Image (tube, rainbow, N blue to C red; front, side, top):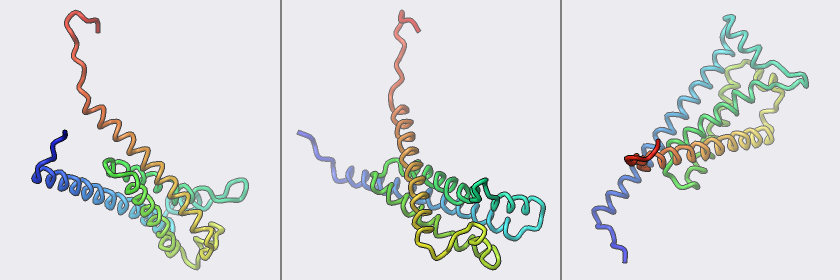
Length: 184
């Protein structure tokens, strides 16, 4: 027979779970604000700067590969933020149930894609959309961008969660003591 926890102990356990959840949410929100702030600052800089580094970054950002497609914006808009936000969600949400972590990654991916019109507003006359060869009214653009960002967020979240859980598990295991007379 297992003993039921005392009401005070059950209340403390519930309080600890809420504290952990709140701490994780605050960490994730701060990470999202940092990533979004960096993305906004970068796009504002390349759109408005007349300095040599600003012009170089703008040319690099809109450069096309041998097939005539832009490659750098996909890394700046999808790859880097998607993985960064996913890894942060996995680290801060290490004790969360998988469905909560997946929901968090979904919201983060949506928040990242929702910033696209803001980036475009820094470039005059719709130049951002035309340079990327996309139609801002295309459902495919938004759906595909969200899907790619979501996949990267989920990969980062569950990969970082598993790595963090393994690290915490190893930390809790006692280190074996060396017995006298045993070889090292």
